[in-house]
Length: 396
Image (cartoon, one colour):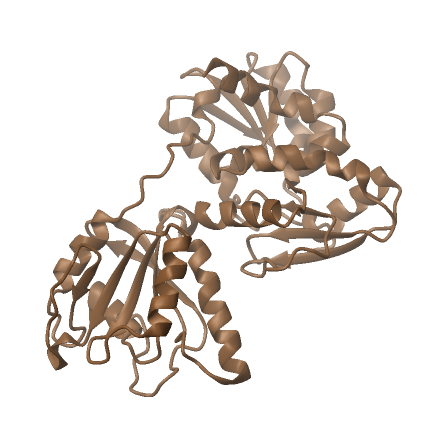
């Protein structure tokens, strides 16, 4: 995705679910008026969830999720069904697609009940209406034809009405007065992507600019010189892995936090991750720890998730811990094997997916925290890194 595009994590996710040959893929093509999805009369053409980002009026930037048929069979089919159902946890609007010639059956009813239990806004879309009769439509149902485009415009209008009203969480601008100077510390090392900034850094810079603030960007190696040359900043935000180094340079009277902590706040994960952090002190030899990232990227010898955090944990706890990792969509359903989870900021995941992961950890009784909080805690600066956010919450 280009720097000028809305990140997928910030787009409304529209998931299409239903049995094989209900016409999910052809419906996506009809809605978007593009050949985005492969269409075939053969059952099971879509074998894995496929996500496609685009603009959809009147909603704006969206991601369509095309899923395998929920009636797939056999050992491989069961795995496809499981993958399809996992997509519900990142779905903001669900379309249950049904072949109108067959109508809704017991399996469709089960899927609809699952959608309702997750409190996902939904529509039941009866496809192929050109080949069948119409029943009376309701607020939650509509009859369409992917082939003739009948009622496709009406479907898009109905989808627009389901746009979720998200909490208007601020990323950073509410922490500092408009016009404030804010220093952003961005290490450029072997793990930094070539020629670009990572998404949280881009988003924080844009959020500061949008509200008339003045971001000053430097590497940690130039931080002391930067502080010497400019007026006192209202806030310093650092990449979490440089927390220890940066905290020694930034005077105590200047607020300090990290991109990762800001992302946890923005994604609605701050409360859970903050309360899970002290479980680090209870870890014992042989405990299994899950370090989870929402993105998939090339690992380096200095990778934060697979190298740096495991080493910091070992040095801090003095225990022999068994570290496991997950990335992308690979967050386990069963978390019972883990004594603790340390999750990234979740910049590549939409809010629904982040909140789902937090809720699953809480439900299964597994403490979960955040990269930035874990690193700050192990360096004895968590209270300092959270102070500006606590002050804001107290003011509210």
